[in-house]
Length: 312
Image (cartoon, rainbow, N blue to C red; front, top):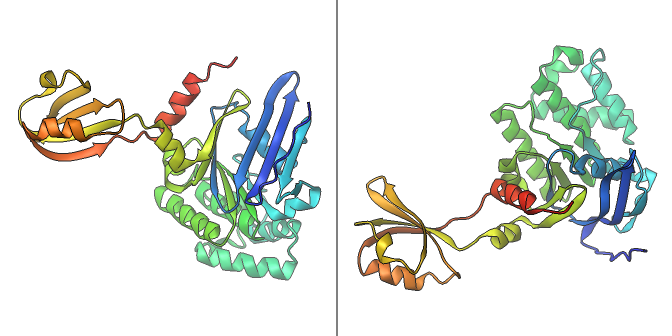
């Protein structure tokens, strides 16, 4: 059955009905997704879920068996590769080649002239404080330094779309923060970033939108704030000073009521988001120090959603 493409002027990538199989194994199954322009888009999923296959289709390393990919509202074509920057998880730098020579070569492959490539690369090498490595061999660099070079050659041609697969592996916390800051600066200038990672703390820190793939299918997508809101279940943490009250709150779903520092902390799940009746009952008996909704982490949402996906 044909798929009707709904063109969204606010999407940089719009895919509909993608199917891809390898030796009888379905890597993507009727996969449809929209990636907003100027987003930091988290591409999530367990190992083998189909993330890498989707990236390979976007970068035209392979082609779909069926379905449609729109890039900037037009069918994806071979020349679009110069508008995309891709840093794979398995880095592909030539160990015996000089760092600067290799960076210039890779930048020229993305459409820059040699003069443009050298000018832009020098800027980034100075910014990342690695100019002293220009004439060194790749094999002389630490893994973190190689990562910096790989990142630079991914973004040097100022692509409209950057795809990063586990970009923070191999970085110490200081250099990871450096890369995160640069990604946010690039995004502010209008570039869309697809971030494929298992590090949920990076997703919460950087991403505006996410998609979760499991068993070759899309099972969750949307703006990250909306996804978190939908998975919140009206659980509240209430810190109070006084005696244990759980026995007096039998009409509520009390998860726990334990000693917390010099106070007690009540964890309670409400049937709705109306906290007033519970607070009224508490305030007549104890001194309430703080009230905070318990917001699920992206890691909790990831695990819960995948476990609940019973599709075979």
